[in-house]
Length: 113
Figure 1: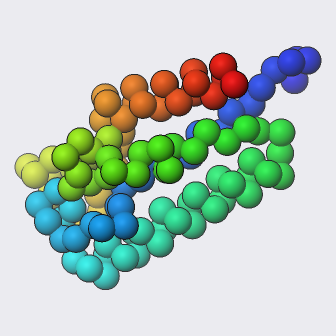
Figure 2 (figure 1 turned 120 degrees about the horizontal axis):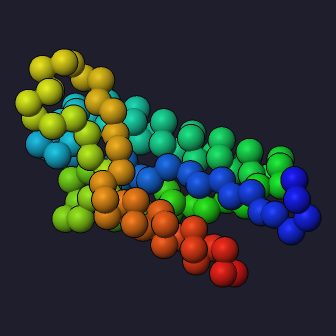
């Protein structure tokens, strides 16, 4: 690595927030919501551990995106469109354009500090 270079590790946006309930925007039952929430917490812990065991600086998007999860008024993530839900419960989650702008803003802010 070049002298002065910085390695950033950007964790995932919050998908299932603490107040998530089954809904059209979060089409899962309570058990699935709890499992997805726990998975998000575990992934955040893995990112934290990876950053602490390396020279990487952690950009905490999970914390920053709280309030922008599925079912919120301004979600930064989305799942399968309704027309594809017939494929089953497996739902890939992706950042929205707003979510990616928030990630870019967080990275720029982090690099300035």
